[in-house]
Each structure stands twice: as C-alpha cells, then as structure tokens.
Length: 569
Image (cartoon, rainbow, N blue to C red; front, side, top):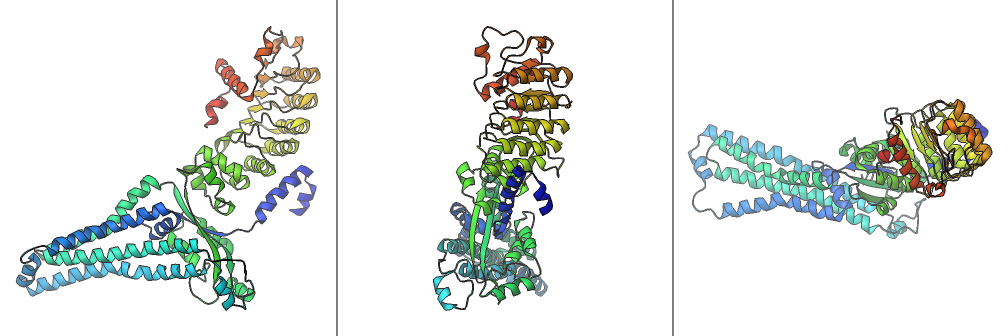
C-alpha cells in the first residue's frame, strides 16, 4: 500500500524498492514438463533439449523395429507351407469369420492411434519452427507489421531442436505402425487355431511397447530428477489491434496460462493445448488467423542430479522462476539451494525453506538481505519451519541488520541464528536488541565480530532484562569496553534463562561477577589465566568448534543440538 510504504523507515523503503524492481521484470511463458517415458510430448521435448538424450530416445525407439526386421527375415526364410495356410484351408465358415473379426479388430484398435496422433502434433511443431523466430524475409513480406524488429534473426538452433521433437514423435508412431503390421501378419501365418491367432497377435503387438519399457528404465536411472522447460517470449502480432483482439477473445487470462504451463502436476496434453490453442492458450503454430506469427523460444533440460554451480548461474532468471516446490524440496541438494540463493535470492525466497538453512560466506548484496527478510517473514506454512539459519560472514551492514531485526521480532519459528562476522555495528545491534524484547522462540544468537561496541552491548543488556527465552548469546570480538561488559553482567544476574554468554576478544569481566563464571566465557574470565592470549579464538571456525565442545560438556545444554551437528553441509 502506497500510504503504508511512505511511513516505513528509510532502510525498509530501500529494500522494498529492490523487491518491487524484481516484480516489475517482464516474464515469459514457461512450460515445464516432468520426464515420463509414457508421455510422448515430454519425451519429444527431452530429445529436443539434450542431444545425448536424443540419441538414447531414438535408439530405444528403434529396438522394436529391429526385432520386427529379424522376425520378417525369419518368416521369409521359412520353407514349406505356413501353419496359417493350413488353418485357413481347414477352418469352417464360422471360424473364418471369427478369425477375420479378431485380427481386424486387433489392427483397428492398435493402429488407429499411431496413424492419427502425428497429425495432431507434428504439423503444429512444423509451423512452430516457422514462428519461433523473426526472419528478415518475413519482415520484407509483411511491411504492415507495427511491432516489427529489424534486428531479429532466425533462430536456427531452436528450429533444429523443434525438428528433433517432431522426429521423435514421428519415429515413435512409425515404429508402432510397422510393429503392429508385422505382428498381425506373423500371427496370420503361424496361427494353428483361431484362439492361437488372437494370442499370437497380442503377444507380438506387445513389442510395440518394448521401447517404452526400455525408456522407462533409462528415465528412472538417469532422468529421475529432470525437468524440461520451454520458455516463450516476445510474442509478435501483425498489429496492435490484432494483439488486443486476440486477448479479448481469449477464454483464459495470461496468469491462468502461466499457472497451467508451469504446474508439474498438470498433464502434458493440457500444457500442449495451452501452448497451441488460440482460445485457451497462446495459439503457437495453430495456423489460425489472429494468432502470434513470431516469438522467441528456448528449451532447457535441467537434471538436478548433475547440476553444478556454473550450470545454475547459466539458467537465467526466466528459467529460475520456473523452479517448482517439488524440485526445490525433493530434487535439489542443500548445496544447490545455496548456489541458487546466491544467484537468484528473491526467487529462492518465495520457495519453502525448512530445517537448517546454511547461507554463509556468500557476500550479500541488498537483494540477498531482502530475501533473508522475506524467508524469515514467511509464516504461511507453519509445518515447514526453519530451526537454524547461518548467514555469517556475508557483509551484512547496519541497514541489513535493521531489516533482519524487524522480521526477527515477529518470527515464531527460528531457534538459532548465526550472524557472525558481518558489519551490523551499533544501529544493527540496537535493532536486534529491540527484537529480542518481543521474540519468544529464539534460543541461540551469535553476533560475534560485528563491532557493536559499548553502545550496542548496553542495548542488548537492556533486552536481556526482558527476554526469558534466549539460552546462548555470542558477543565475541565486538570491541565492547568495561561499561558494556558491566551492563551485560548486571543484566545476566537478572536473566535466569541465558546459560552461555561468550565475551572473548572484549574487555575483562569485572571481579564482582564471580558467581557468573559458569555462564560467561571470556578471555579473562573472573581471574585472568596465564595463557589467555592463546585461548582467544582466531577465527569464526574456532568459535564454532568451542561451541560444540562446550555444549557436549554441559549436561543442561539446549536440546536444539549443536550448530555443527545441524548444519548439514
């Protein structure tokens, strides 16, 4: 809301603009296909998206054909009279009628699909190869086009890929026709009875599905975590009036088309209709007057089982937007999720995060901090909650600390937050202190190495007098002087929930805190040890190691588990 936006603090306005800019980017129409051996459309687009997959698919489709060729050779090489000839000569009229009806029904039922399916898809694919790019020749022939772009060139690569999809569909159906024809002929020649004729035809007709059985095994082994994405953008009409008329007469909205194309649970036949039908979809390749005559297309095969960091970076935002919840949860690894967040933070923030979220050492920019705030603010799915979040060593500044604190105050699921080695300074520490006064779920908070100083420490000490749920707090290497240390110690006397307070790398703890020595971990403790300098942590990794060690020694440690045990990377 604009009025509410005006009343927000400056730092929230800044991050709000980052999110708003992301929403304003143009979006393509993206169709996602789950790879299924029985789905000819998804297999055709898989062949078009990956040349290795194309070779495998065409090879498996040739297996039944090879078997049929061997069968024909065997039939042709047979000597003497065929059993079917004897059956035809000795059978009664009734048996002849039953046999003819049986084999005729087998042919009609089995062959009608392979004969008709290509005519429903292949011509459309052929016309799509003509409209998937904007040709200079087309520009010359259509000088009345309002939206002509003279710089666009034909996309020969995409044409080849669509041609491969068409070949995959045609070869599958041609193989089926040949297998059914040969199996029916073999059944007639070698049947010794009418019942045997039926069983022989059915048994040999089963070979037409042999390629599907082989391909199903291939998909299970190598493409179980794969999806194919076809993106369509820059739709072109001959005039603006024709474009307006197209959408005015459409039975569906752009949002409904996008939602239907991207839904992995939506059947491929429905997505094909959304792509090609003029009234319920985009009308690509339909040949119907008023449909788009040119567009840009790209096709991607994403195999999450083998996808590396550089592959995720080359996906592009349009494809990254198509990542579905099912892919995110069941196909992507935790490391891939971290890579994905580093490259597309605002897109990743809209997906469900749960358990341990490790996003450290990424070197955040503004959009990353905004994305973290979105993740922490997302409480729509209470079943999938985040227990531990690592965002340390990410160059989070004062404004970033303020934004995270804003959502931390209302967060109801986070148990442990690592915010070490950033740059939230005093303003960020004060904002987090205010959040701790109202937060009721956070158990562990680590702010080591953030240069909060005495002023930030005093603010946190004030929040400890109110907070009754925090159990561990890390404030090492923060430049806290004697005033800040004293205020923290005084607050710890009133706070009974905080069991561990790390203060190494700051000023010494005053002597009056003798009764707090079991709860305060400091360089000097109450009585400075002789080798205190060597006990000072040299890195963030050293601190995590000591947290793990201290937690295991402490029988009253939090049941959340140690950070190293829950990190999961």
